[in-house]
Image (cartoon, rainbow, N blue to C red; front, side):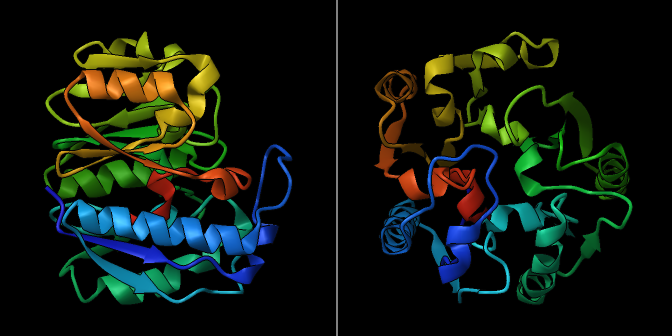
Length: 253
């Protein structure tokens, strides 16, 4: 169960956020509205939400998930794979010192994005992607082992992050895009397979019995609800334009 979440209000510079596919620039005012709705959803899930001010220096800073990995035993500051995002971690660390006694960090030449980590209990699946390299994964594994946790790596064949295609809910349910649903390391889970045409919906978020799902993907929503979950549907149109998903917008702990 989670009790808190950290979010950051989008800055005006969010319109210049990184993007792999040109879906047009996000509409700033609409992004603010969608972010406010996201915060309301977190509160509905029972979370105390810590809201950080916008940071105009970093267009992608609203995607706070990539800056840290929060575990029960230690907070781990990442080293984001996109050079333009590496300055985001300093302010996040200054916030986390109020909540964690132990804080570790991924160091150069290792890179790691929080969006590449899928957590199942004491086990951390680390996606090897364009944003998370082998050295970053090795450093993370060493830190996790020091604090009594386990890990393994997964090659990210498509999508920005591992969480672009895979989401652990609870009760052994794993939401996975079709390509990932067949991987040997995931066969111990009860797979909720997501059709390729609704791939964006693979990035959903379990919070205290609810599942946040992006609006506009009825088949995925039905699949998740069919497993017994109450969904909260959120419009993510403006964040999708800059490669962001539901999990990206918060650090939950």
